[in-house]
Image 1 (cartoon, rainbow over the protein chains, first blue to last red):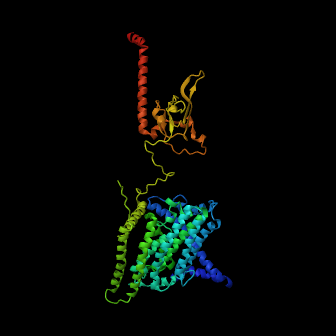
Image 2: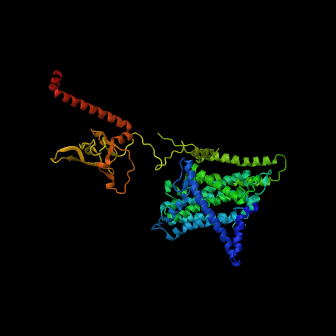
Image 3: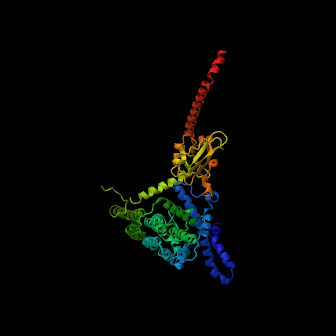
Length: 398
Length: 193
Protein backbone atom coordinates (compact mmCIF):
# COMPACT_ATOMS: atom_id res chain seq x y z
CA UNK A 1 0.00 0.00 0.00
CA UNK A 2 2.76 2.43 1.00
CA UNK A 3 4.73 1.45 -2.07
CA UNK A 4 1.69 2.21 -4.26
CA UNK A 5 1.20 5.74 -3.00
CA UNK A 6 4.87 6.52 -2.57
CA UNK A 7 5.69 5.58 -6.16
CA UNK A 8 2.31 6.60 -7.62
CA UNK A 9 3.61 9.33 -9.92
CA UNK A 10 6.77 7.44 -10.83
CA UNK A 11 4.78 4.38 -11.88
CA UNK A 12 2.26 6.55 -13.70
CA UNK A 13 5.03 8.08 -15.76
CA UNK A 14 6.58 4.68 -16.47
CA UNK A 15 3.19 3.38 -17.59
CA UNK A 16 2.69 6.30 -19.98
CA UNK A 17 6.21 6.05 -21.37
CA UNK A 18 5.90 2.26 -21.66
CA UNK A 19 2.71 2.60 -23.69
CA UNK A 20 4.47 4.68 -26.33
CA UNK A 21 6.31 3.15 -29.32
CA UNK A 22 9.98 2.40 -28.78
CA UNK A 23 11.38 5.35 -30.72
CA UNK A 24 9.35 7.95 -28.82
CA UNK A 25 10.26 6.92 -25.30
CA UNK A 26 13.54 8.82 -25.09
CA UNK A 27 11.78 12.04 -26.05
CA UNK A 28 8.59 11.46 -24.04
CA UNK A 29 10.25 10.79 -20.69
CA UNK A 30 11.79 14.24 -20.13
CA UNK A 31 8.78 15.95 -21.70
CA UNK A 32 6.40 14.28 -19.27
CA UNK A 33 8.63 15.25 -16.33
CA UNK A 34 8.82 18.83 -17.58
CA UNK A 35 5.05 19.02 -18.08
CA UNK A 36 4.44 17.67 -14.58
CA UNK A 37 6.87 20.16 -13.01
CA UNK A 38 5.39 23.03 -14.99
CA UNK A 39 1.81 22.07 -14.16
CA UNK A 40 2.36 21.46 -10.45
CA UNK A 41 4.47 24.52 -9.79
CA UNK A 42 2.40 26.88 -11.94
CA UNK A 43 -0.70 25.89 -9.96
CA UNK A 44 1.28 26.24 -6.78
CA UNK A 45 2.17 29.75 -7.93
CA UNK A 46 -1.52 30.62 -8.35
CA UNK A 47 -2.30 29.20 -4.93
CA UNK A 48 0.64 31.01 -3.34
CA UNK A 49 -0.42 34.37 -4.71
CA UNK A 50 -3.85 33.89 -3.16
CA UNK A 51 -2.48 32.64 0.16
CA UNK A 52 0.00 35.50 0.20
CA UNK A 53 -2.64 38.15 -0.39
CA UNK A 54 -4.96 36.63 2.19
CA UNK A 55 -2.16 36.06 4.69
CA UNK A 56 -0.67 39.52 4.32
CA UNK A 57 -4.15 40.91 4.76
CA UNK A 58 -4.63 39.03 8.00
CA UNK A 59 -1.21 40.13 9.23
CA UNK A 60 -2.30 43.71 8.63
CA UNK A 61 -5.74 43.06 10.16
CA UNK A 62 -7.56 43.18 6.83
CA UNK A 63 -9.71 40.40 5.34
CA UNK A 64 -7.75 40.23 2.07
CA UNK A 65 -9.33 39.58 -1.33
CA UNK A 66 -12.78 38.03 -0.83
CA UNK A 67 -14.86 39.12 -3.81
CA UNK A 68 -14.14 36.64 -6.59
CA UNK A 69 -15.75 33.28 -5.93
CA UNK A 70 -16.41 31.85 -2.47
CA UNK A 71 -14.12 33.61 0.04
CA UNK A 72 -12.07 34.99 -2.86
CA UNK A 73 -10.84 31.57 -3.96
CA UNK A 74 -11.11 32.38 -7.66
CA UNK A 75 -8.92 35.47 -7.35
CA UNK A 76 -5.93 33.82 -9.13
CA UNK A 77 -8.19 33.08 -12.09
CA UNK A 78 -9.33 36.70 -12.22
CA UNK A 79 -5.71 37.88 -11.97
CA UNK A 80 -4.75 35.51 -14.76
CA UNK A 81 -7.49 36.77 -17.09
CA UNK A 82 -6.56 40.33 -16.25
CA UNK A 83 -2.87 39.79 -16.99
CA UNK A 84 -3.69 37.97 -20.21
CA UNK A 85 -6.07 40.59 -21.59
CA UNK A 86 -4.10 43.66 -20.58
CA UNK A 87 -2.48 45.72 -23.28
CA UNK A 88 1.17 44.85 -23.83
CA UNK A 89 3.01 48.15 -24.09
CA UNK A 90 6.55 48.33 -25.46
CA UNK A 91 8.21 51.75 -25.18
CA UNK A 92 9.15 53.36 -28.50
CA UNK A 93 12.78 53.78 -27.48
CA UNK A 94 13.07 50.27 -26.04
CA UNK A 95 15.30 47.60 -27.53
CA UNK A 96 12.41 45.53 -28.81
CA UNK A 97 14.19 42.19 -29.10
CA UNK A 98 15.79 42.30 -25.66
CA UNK A 99 12.61 43.68 -24.16
CA UNK A 100 10.73 40.70 -25.51
CA UNK A 101 13.42 38.16 -24.59
CA UNK A 102 13.98 39.25 -20.99
CA UNK A 103 10.90 37.52 -19.49
CA UNK A 104 11.71 34.35 -21.43
CA UNK A 105 15.32 34.39 -20.25
CA UNK A 106 14.02 34.95 -16.74
CA UNK A 107 11.63 32.00 -16.73
CA UNK A 108 13.61 29.38 -18.65
CA UNK A 109 16.60 28.96 -16.27
CA UNK A 110 14.29 28.88 -13.27
CA UNK A 111 12.43 25.98 -14.86
CA UNK A 112 15.74 24.33 -15.74
CA UNK A 113 16.76 24.42 -12.10
CA UNK A 114 13.78 22.22 -11.22
CA UNK A 115 15.24 19.41 -13.30
CA UNK A 116 17.72 18.38 -10.61
CA UNK A 117 15.50 18.74 -7.54
CA UNK A 118 14.33 15.46 -5.98
CA UNK A 119 10.64 15.88 -5.13
CA UNK A 120 10.22 12.40 -3.70
CA UNK A 121 11.73 8.96 -3.68
CA UNK A 122 12.89 8.33 -7.30
CA UNK A 123 11.15 11.56 -8.31
CA UNK A 124 13.87 13.59 -9.95
CA UNK A 125 13.77 14.60 -13.58
CA UNK A 126 17.55 14.35 -14.12
CA UNK A 127 19.78 12.62 -11.58
CA UNK A 128 22.78 14.76 -12.26
CA UNK A 129 26.14 14.20 -10.57
CA UNK A 130 26.78 17.93 -10.37
CA UNK A 131 23.15 18.79 -9.57
CA UNK A 132 23.93 21.52 -7.08
CA UNK A 133 26.36 23.19 -9.45
CA UNK A 134 23.80 22.98 -12.23
CA UNK A 135 21.18 24.54 -9.99
CA UNK A 136 23.32 27.57 -9.20
CA UNK A 137 24.53 27.88 -12.77
CA UNK A 138 20.94 27.99 -14.01
CA UNK A 139 19.94 30.32 -11.21
CA UNK A 140 22.68 32.76 -12.15
CA UNK A 141 21.01 33.37 -15.52
CA UNK A 142 18.25 35.23 -13.70
CA UNK A 143 20.67 38.09 -13.15
CA UNK A 144 21.20 38.36 -16.87
CA UNK A 145 17.45 38.48 -17.46
CA UNK A 146 16.96 41.19 -14.87
CA UNK A 147 19.66 43.30 -16.43
CA UNK A 148 18.25 42.67 -19.91
CA UNK A 149 14.88 43.88 -18.72
CA UNK A 150 16.34 46.96 -17.06
CA UNK A 151 18.61 47.88 -19.94
CA UNK A 152 16.24 47.26 -22.82
CA UNK A 153 13.44 49.33 -21.29
CA UNK A 154 15.48 52.50 -21.89
CA UNK A 155 14.23 54.02 -18.68
CA UNK A 156 16.36 55.41 -15.89
CA UNK A 157 14.29 53.82 -13.16
CA UNK A 158 14.40 50.38 -14.67
CA UNK A 159 18.14 50.67 -15.30
CA UNK A 160 18.78 51.76 -11.72
CA UNK A 161 16.58 48.94 -10.47
CA UNK A 162 18.45 46.44 -12.61
CA UNK A 163 21.82 47.73 -11.37
CA UNK A 164 20.64 47.32 -7.82
CA UNK A 165 19.34 43.85 -8.58
CA UNK A 166 22.69 42.81 -10.06
CA UNK A 167 24.63 44.21 -7.11
CA UNK A 168 22.29 42.50 -4.66
CA UNK A 169 22.19 39.16 -6.44
CA UNK A 170 25.93 38.89 -6.92
CA UNK A 171 26.56 39.89 -3.31
CA UNK A 172 24.14 37.35 -1.94
CA UNK A 173 25.12 34.57 -4.34
CA UNK A 174 28.33 34.22 -2.32
CA UNK A 175 26.80 33.46 1.10
CA UNK A 176 24.14 31.37 -0.65
CA UNK A 177 26.65 29.07 -2.30
CA UNK A 178 29.09 29.06 0.62
CA UNK A 179 26.26 28.05 2.96
CA UNK A 180 25.63 24.98 0.84
CA UNK A 181 29.31 24.07 0.77
CA UNK A 182 29.29 22.70 4.30
CA UNK A 183 26.79 20.06 3.25
CA UNK A 184 28.78 19.32 0.08
CA UNK A 185 31.94 18.95 2.18
CA UNK A 186 30.40 16.45 4.55
CA UNK A 187 28.44 14.47 1.98
CA UNK A 188 31.26 14.51 -0.56
CA UNK A 189 28.92 14.82 -3.51
CA UNK A 190 27.22 17.54 -5.55
CA UNK A 191 24.36 15.25 -6.51
CA UNK A 192 21.16 16.26 -4.76
CA UNK A 193 20.03 12.63 -4.68
CA UNK A 194 23.16 11.74 -2.71
CA UNK A 195 22.62 14.67 -0.37
CA UNK A 196 19.09 13.48 0.39
CA UNK A 197 20.33 9.93 0.91
CA UNK A 198 22.99 11.17 3.33
CA UNK A 199 20.19 12.45 5.59
CA UNK A 200 18.41 9.11 5.88
CA UNK A 201 18.34 7.36 9.24
CA UNK A 202 17.58 8.65 12.71
CA UNK A 203 19.23 10.02 15.84
CA UNK A 204 18.34 7.98 18.94
CA UNK A 205 15.90 5.98 16.87
CA UNK A 206 13.34 8.72 16.25
CA UNK A 207 14.69 12.14 15.19
CA UNK A 208 15.63 12.31 11.51
CA UNK A 209 19.30 12.78 10.75
CA UNK A 210 18.94 16.12 8.98
CA UNK A 211 21.81 18.55 8.58
CA UNK A 212 19.74 21.31 10.14
CA UNK A 213 20.03 19.51 13.51
CA UNK A 214 23.78 20.11 13.61
CA UNK A 215 25.09 23.49 14.84
CA UNK A 216 26.86 24.36 11.60
CA UNK A 217 23.87 23.06 9.63
CA UNK A 218 21.47 25.30 11.51
CA UNK A 219 23.72 28.31 10.97
CA UNK A 220 24.15 27.49 7.29
CA UNK A 221 20.39 26.99 6.98
CA UNK A 222 19.63 30.42 8.44
CA UNK A 223 22.25 32.09 6.26
CA UNK A 224 20.94 30.17 3.26
CA UNK A 225 17.41 31.39 4.00
CA UNK A 226 18.51 35.01 4.26
CA UNK A 227 20.54 34.81 1.08
CA UNK A 228 17.74 32.96 -0.71
CA UNK A 229 15.30 35.71 0.21
CA UNK A 230 17.67 38.23 -1.27
CA UNK A 231 18.31 36.09 -4.36
CA UNK A 232 14.62 35.79 -5.13
CA UNK A 233 14.05 39.53 -4.60
CA UNK A 234 11.60 38.96 -1.80
CA UNK A 235 10.83 41.41 0.99
CA UNK A 236 12.74 42.63 2.98
CA UNK A 237 15.33 42.50 0.18
CA UNK A 238 13.04 43.68 -2.63
CA UNK A 239 15.03 46.84 -3.26
CA UNK A 240 15.33 46.30 -7.02
CA UNK A 241 11.62 46.99 -7.26
CA UNK A 242 11.38 49.46 -4.39
CA UNK A 243 8.20 51.36 -5.22
CA UNK A 244 9.07 54.39 -3.16
CA UNK A 245 12.19 55.31 -5.08
CA UNK A 246 12.23 53.25 -8.29
CA UNK A 247 8.53 52.79 -9.20
CA UNK A 248 9.00 49.05 -9.92
CA UNK A 249 12.67 48.74 -10.82
CA UNK A 250 13.34 46.64 -13.88
CA UNK A 251 9.60 45.94 -14.24
CA UNK A 252 8.62 49.58 -14.88
CA UNK A 253 8.09 49.20 -18.62
CA UNK A 254 6.51 45.76 -18.50
CA UNK A 255 2.79 45.23 -18.59
CA UNK A 256 0.29 42.50 -19.30
CA UNK A 257 1.54 38.98 -19.69
CA UNK A 258 5.23 39.84 -19.83
CA UNK A 259 4.91 41.30 -16.38
CA UNK A 260 3.02 38.19 -15.29
CA UNK A 261 5.87 36.03 -16.57
CA UNK A 262 8.36 37.99 -14.46
CA UNK A 263 6.05 37.50 -11.55
CA UNK A 264 5.75 33.76 -12.17
CA UNK A 265 9.52 33.43 -12.59
CA UNK A 266 10.13 35.22 -9.31
CA UNK A 267 7.80 32.89 -7.45
CA UNK A 268 9.07 29.78 -9.20
CA UNK A 269 12.58 30.88 -8.23
CA UNK A 270 11.42 31.17 -4.65
CA UNK A 271 9.96 27.67 -4.74
CA UNK A 272 13.17 26.36 -6.30
CA UNK A 273 15.45 27.78 -3.61
CA UNK A 274 13.00 26.60 -0.96
CA UNK A 275 13.15 23.13 -2.48
CA UNK A 276 16.93 23.33 -2.46
CA UNK A 277 16.93 24.36 1.20
CA UNK A 278 14.69 21.39 1.94
CA UNK A 279 17.00 19.07 0.02
CA UNK A 280 20.18 20.35 1.63
CA UNK A 281 19.18 20.89 5.23
CA UNK A 282 15.73 19.47 5.90
CA UNK A 283 16.24 15.94 4.68
CA UNK A 284 14.58 16.31 1.30
CA UNK A 285 11.58 14.03 1.16
CA UNK A 286 12.39 12.22 4.44
CA UNK A 287 9.87 12.33 7.29
CA UNK A 288 10.93 14.42 10.32
CA UNK A 289 10.41 11.66 12.91
CA UNK A 290 10.63 7.92 12.61
CA UNK A 291 6.94 7.20 13.31
CA UNK A 292 5.69 9.27 10.38
CA UNK A 293 7.49 7.64 7.47
CA UNK A 294 4.39 5.70 6.41
CA UNK A 295 3.29 8.86 4.58
CA UNK A 296 4.46 9.16 0.95
CA UNK A 297 7.77 10.89 0.34
CA UNK A 298 6.31 13.51 -2.02
CA UNK A 299 3.79 14.39 0.67
CA UNK A 300 6.60 15.28 3.07
CA UNK A 301 8.32 17.33 0.42
CA UNK A 302 5.07 19.20 -0.23
CA UNK A 303 4.50 19.86 3.46
CA UNK A 304 7.99 21.27 3.86
CA UNK A 305 7.59 23.42 0.75
CA UNK A 306 4.26 24.75 2.03
CA UNK A 307 5.98 25.55 5.30
CA UNK A 308 8.64 27.52 3.45
CA UNK A 309 6.03 29.44 1.46
CA UNK A 310 4.15 30.38 4.62
CA UNK A 311 7.41 31.41 6.23
CA UNK A 312 8.36 33.67 3.32
CA UNK A 313 4.92 35.27 3.38
CA UNK A 314 5.32 35.82 7.10
CA UNK A 315 8.71 37.44 6.53
CA UNK A 316 7.22 39.71 3.90
CA UNK A 317 4.46 40.75 6.26
CA UNK A 318 6.87 41.45 9.10
CA UNK A 319 10.11 43.03 7.97
CA UNK A 320 10.38 46.45 6.34
CA UNK A 321 12.62 46.92 3.32
CA UNK A 322 16.30 47.43 4.16
CA UNK A 323 18.41 50.30 2.91
CA UNK A 324 20.86 49.77 0.04
CA UNK A 325 24.02 50.33 2.07
CA UNK A 326 22.68 48.13 4.86
CA UNK A 327 21.90 45.45 2.31
CA UNK A 328 25.43 45.42 0.92
CA UNK A 329 27.07 45.80 4.33
CA UNK A 330 25.03 42.92 5.68
CA UNK A 331 26.13 40.61 2.88
CA UNK A 332 29.82 41.49 2.77
CA UNK A 333 30.62 42.40 6.37
CA UNK A 334 28.37 40.03 8.24
CA UNK A 335 27.13 37.06 6.23
CA UNK A 336 30.33 36.40 4.32
CA UNK A 337 32.72 36.15 7.33
CA UNK A 338 30.18 34.10 9.24
CA UNK A 339 29.56 31.67 6.43
CA UNK A 340 33.29 31.20 5.85
CA UNK A 341 33.78 30.58 9.55
CA UNK A 342 30.88 28.18 9.42
CA UNK A 343 32.86 26.04 6.96
CA UNK A 344 35.59 25.76 9.57
CA UNK A 345 32.99 24.70 12.14
CA UNK A 346 31.66 22.11 9.69
CA UNK A 347 35.19 20.77 9.32
CA UNK A 348 35.58 20.58 13.11
CA UNK A 349 32.26 18.75 13.26
CA UNK A 350 33.54 16.30 10.66
CA UNK A 351 36.87 15.61 12.34
CA UNK A 352 35.27 15.21 15.77
CA UNK A 353 32.91 12.49 14.53
CA UNK A 354 35.21 9.78 15.91
CA UNK A 355 35.08 11.04 19.53
CA UNK A 356 34.11 8.16 21.75
CA UNK A 357 34.52 9.32 25.36
CA UNK A 358 31.61 9.93 27.76
CA UNK A 359 29.56 13.03 26.88
CA UNK A 360 31.34 13.38 23.56
CA UNK A 361 28.08 13.92 21.63
CA UNK A 362 26.96 16.78 23.85
CA UNK A 363 30.41 18.34 24.00
CA UNK A 364 30.69 18.21 20.25
CA UNK A 365 27.31 19.85 19.77
CA UNK A 366 27.76 22.53 22.42
CA UNK A 367 31.33 23.22 21.35
CA UNK A 368 30.41 23.72 17.72
CA UNK A 369 27.38 25.82 18.66
CA UNK A 370 29.60 28.06 20.78
CA UNK A 371 32.08 28.33 17.92
CA UNK A 372 29.28 29.87 15.85
CA UNK A 373 27.38 31.84 18.47
CA UNK A 374 30.38 33.66 19.94
CA UNK A 375 31.63 35.10 16.62
CA UNK A 376 28.01 35.84 15.65
CA UNK A 377 27.47 37.79 18.81
CA UNK A 378 30.80 39.61 18.67
CA UNK A 379 30.58 40.44 14.99
CA UNK A 380 26.99 41.52 15.38
CA UNK A 381 27.83 43.79 18.28
CA UNK A 382 30.85 45.30 16.53
CA UNK A 383 28.93 46.05 13.36
CA UNK A 384 25.91 47.22 15.28
CA UNK A 385 27.80 49.82 17.25
CA UNK A 386 30.72 50.81 15.04
CA UNK A 387 29.90 50.34 11.42
CA UNK A 388 26.43 51.74 11.16
CA UNK A 389 24.52 48.51 10.66
CA UNK A 390 22.39 49.25 13.68
CA UNK A 391 19.39 51.53 13.99
CA UNK A 392 20.08 55.18 13.35
CA UNK A 393 18.97 57.87 15.70
CA UNK A 394 18.29 61.35 14.46
CA UNK A 395 18.87 64.39 16.60
CA UNK A 396 17.86 67.94 15.94
CA UNK A 397 20.92 70.18 15.90
CA UNK A 398 20.16 73.51 17.46
CA UNK B 1 21.77 40.04 20.65
CA UNK B 2 21.55 40.89 16.99
CA UNK B 3 18.28 39.58 15.58
CA UNK B 4 16.13 39.76 18.69
CA UNK B 5 14.12 42.64 17.22
CA UNK B 6 13.27 40.49 14.22
CA UNK B 7 11.90 37.76 16.48
CA UNK B 8 9.81 40.36 18.29
CA UNK B 9 8.42 41.52 14.97
CA UNK B 10 7.53 37.97 13.99
CA UNK B 11 5.63 37.48 17.23
CA UNK B 12 3.73 40.70 16.64
CA UNK B 13 2.63 39.81 13.11
CA UNK B 14 1.72 36.28 14.19
CA UNK B 15 -0.46 37.78 16.90
CA UNK B 16 -2.13 39.98 14.30
CA UNK B 17 -2.67 37.03 12.00
CA UNK B 18 -4.23 34.80 14.65
CA UNK B 19 -6.10 37.65 16.29
CA UNK B 20 -7.79 38.74 13.07
CA UNK B 21 -9.56 35.37 12.92
CA UNK B 22 -11.14 35.34 16.37
CA UNK B 23 -11.13 38.94 17.54
CA UNK B 24 -13.61 41.14 15.63
CA UNK B 25 -12.09 44.19 17.31
CA UNK B 26 -8.96 43.71 15.22
CA UNK B 27 -10.62 43.23 11.87
CA UNK B 28 -11.83 46.78 11.45
CA UNK B 29 -12.65 46.67 7.75
CA UNK B 30 -16.24 47.57 6.89
CA UNK B 31 -17.03 45.82 3.61
CA UNK B 32 -18.77 48.83 2.14
CA UNK B 33 -21.37 47.76 -0.38
CA UNK B 34 -22.50 44.96 1.93
CA UNK B 35 -22.10 46.76 5.21
CA UNK B 36 -22.39 50.42 5.94
CA UNK B 37 -20.83 52.55 8.57
CA UNK B 38 -23.31 54.70 10.45
CA UNK B 39 -22.56 58.28 9.52
CA UNK B 40 -21.74 60.63 12.38
CA UNK B 41 -24.27 63.33 13.32
CA UNK B 42 -22.15 66.10 11.87
CA UNK B 43 -21.34 64.48 8.54
CA UNK B 44 -22.34 66.51 5.52
CA UNK B 45 -21.99 66.33 1.80
CA UNK B 46 -24.17 68.56 -0.39
CA UNK B 47 -27.09 70.84 0.45
CA UNK B 48 -30.76 69.87 0.20
CA UNK B 49 -34.04 71.82 0.47
CA UNK B 50 -36.23 70.92 3.43
CA UNK B 51 -40.02 70.90 3.00
CA UNK B 52 -42.84 70.54 5.51
CA UNK B 53 -45.99 68.54 4.89
CA UNK B 54 -46.58 66.05 2.09
CA UNK B 55 -46.21 68.06 -1.11
CA UNK B 56 -42.54 68.75 -1.81
CA UNK B 57 -43.20 71.81 -3.95
CA UNK B 58 -45.87 73.42 -1.79
CA UNK B 59 -44.10 72.71 1.48
CA UNK B 60 -40.70 74.14 0.54
CA UNK B 61 -39.46 76.48 3.25
CA UNK B 62 -37.42 78.34 0.66
CA UNK B 63 -38.78 81.78 -0.19
CA UNK B 64 -36.32 82.45 -3.01
CA UNK B 65 -34.66 85.32 -1.13
CA UNK B 66 -31.39 84.49 -2.99
CA UNK B 67 -29.18 85.07 0.07
CA UNK B 68 -27.55 81.68 -0.38
CA UNK B 69 -27.04 82.33 -4.07
CA UNK B 70 -25.16 85.52 -3.25
CA UNK B 71 -23.14 84.05 -0.41
CA UNK B 72 -22.14 80.81 -2.14
CA UNK B 73 -18.33 81.06 -2.62
CA UNK B 74 -18.09 78.85 -5.73
CA UNK B 75 -21.47 80.15 -6.98
CA UNK B 76 -23.06 76.79 -7.51
CA UNK B 77 -26.64 77.92 -6.71
CA UNK B 78 -28.99 79.47 -9.26
CA UNK B 79 -32.42 80.77 -8.13
CA UNK B 80 -35.32 82.35 -9.98
CA UNK B 81 -38.38 83.61 -8.13
CA UNK B 82 -41.84 82.38 -9.02
CA UNK B 83 -44.06 85.25 -10.20
CA UNK B 84 -47.79 85.45 -10.68
CA UNK B 85 -49.51 86.80 -13.81
CA UNK B 86 -49.02 90.42 -12.70
CA UNK B 87 -45.31 89.92 -12.14
CA UNK B 88 -45.53 89.93 -8.34
CA UNK B 89 -42.97 87.75 -6.53
CA UNK B 90 -44.58 84.75 -4.87
CA UNK B 91 -42.01 83.88 -2.16
CA UNK B 92 -41.34 80.61 -3.87
CA UNK B 93 -38.51 79.49 -6.17
CA UNK B 94 -39.47 78.80 -9.77
CA UNK B 95 -35.97 77.45 -10.40
CA UNK B 96 -33.56 76.29 -7.70
CA UNK B 97 -30.55 74.63 -9.29
CA UNK B 98 -27.48 73.41 -7.43
CA UNK B 99 -24.42 72.15 -9.29
CA UNK B 100 -22.80 69.52 -7.05
CA UNK B 101 -19.81 69.31 -9.35
CA UNK B 102 -19.03 72.87 -8.22
CA UNK B 103 -20.30 72.79 -4.65
CA UNK B 104 -17.50 72.55 -2.09
CA UNK B 105 -19.68 71.49 0.86
CA UNK B 106 -18.76 74.60 2.89
CA UNK B 107 -22.21 74.90 4.50
CA UNK B 108 -22.23 78.69 4.19
CA UNK B 109 -25.65 78.55 2.48
CA UNK B 110 -27.00 76.73 5.51
CA UNK B 111 -25.56 79.27 7.90
CA UNK B 112 -26.94 82.30 6.08
CA UNK B 113 -30.44 80.94 5.40
CA UNK B 114 -32.90 82.81 7.68
CA UNK B 115 -35.71 80.33 6.96
CA UNK B 116 -33.94 77.04 7.81
CA UNK B 117 -34.82 76.02 4.27
CA UNK B 118 -31.46 74.74 3.05
CA UNK B 119 -29.62 72.08 5.05
CA UNK B 120 -26.73 69.72 4.42
CA UNK B 121 -27.54 66.24 3.14
CA UNK B 122 -25.41 63.19 3.95
CA UNK B 123 -26.08 61.21 0.75
CA UNK B 124 -22.78 60.41 -0.95
CA UNK B 125 -23.64 57.83 -3.60
CA UNK B 126 -24.19 60.43 -6.31
CA UNK B 127 -22.18 58.99 -9.17
CA UNK B 128 -23.81 59.33 -12.54
CA UNK B 129 -22.98 58.61 -16.16
CA UNK B 130 -23.85 62.16 -17.19
CA UNK B 131 -21.38 64.64 -15.85
CA UNK B 132 -23.43 67.72 -16.78
CA UNK B 133 -27.13 67.02 -16.28
CA UNK B 134 -26.52 64.30 -13.76
CA UNK B 135 -24.66 66.56 -11.38
CA UNK B 136 -26.92 69.61 -11.76
CA UNK B 137 -29.72 69.04 -9.26
CA UNK B 138 -33.05 70.89 -9.64
CA UNK B 139 -35.50 71.73 -6.87
CA UNK B 140 -37.39 68.46 -7.29
CA UNK B 141 -34.23 66.48 -6.69
CA UNK B 142 -33.12 68.75 -3.86
CA UNK B 143 -36.42 68.71 -1.93
CA UNK B 144 -36.29 66.40 1.07
CA UNK B 145 -38.98 66.02 3.77
CA UNK B 146 -38.39 67.31 7.27
CA UNK B 147 -38.67 63.74 8.56
CA UNK B 148 -35.56 62.86 6.51
CA UNK B 149 -33.76 65.85 7.95
CA UNK B 150 -34.69 64.66 11.43
CA UNK B 151 -33.35 61.20 10.61
CA UNK B 152 -29.94 62.31 9.38
CA UNK B 153 -29.26 65.20 11.80
CA UNK B 154 -31.44 64.47 14.86
CA UNK B 155 -29.96 67.03 17.26
CA UNK B 156 -29.79 69.88 14.77
CA UNK B 157 -33.30 69.13 13.43
CA UNK B 158 -34.79 69.07 16.94
CA UNK B 159 -33.31 72.49 17.63
CA UNK B 160 -34.64 73.86 14.31
CA UNK B 161 -38.09 72.35 14.86
CA UNK B 162 -38.27 73.82 18.35
CA UNK B 163 -37.27 77.26 17.11
CA UNK B 164 -39.73 77.17 14.22
CA UNK B 165 -42.51 75.98 16.51
CA UNK B 166 -41.76 78.80 18.94
CA UNK B 167 -41.77 81.34 16.11
CA UNK B 168 -45.02 79.93 14.82
CA UNK B 169 -46.59 80.03 18.27
CA UNK B 170 -45.41 83.61 18.66
CA UNK B 171 -46.86 84.54 15.29
CA UNK B 172 -50.10 82.75 16.15
CA UNK B 173 -50.34 84.56 19.50
CA UNK B 174 -49.64 87.86 17.79
CA UNK B 175 -52.30 87.13 15.19
CA UNK B 176 -54.69 86.12 17.94
CA UNK B 177 -53.97 89.27 19.88
CA UNK B 178 -54.50 91.33 16.75
CA UNK B 179 -57.70 89.45 16.04
CA UNK B 180 -58.81 89.95 19.63
CA UNK B 181 -58.13 93.68 19.47
CA UNK B 182 -60.06 94.36 16.25
CA UNK B 183 -63.46 92.88 17.06
CA UNK B 184 -63.16 93.88 20.73
CA UNK B 185 -66.27 96.13 20.97
CA UNK B 186 -68.50 93.43 19.56
CA UNK B 187 -67.19 90.98 22.08
CA UNK B 188 -67.76 93.36 24.90
CA UNK B 189 -71.27 93.92 23.68
CA UNK B 190 -71.87 90.25 23.49
CA UNK B 191 -70.79 89.87 27.06
CA UNK B 192 -72.93 92.78 28.10
CA UNK B 193 -76.08 91.51 26.47
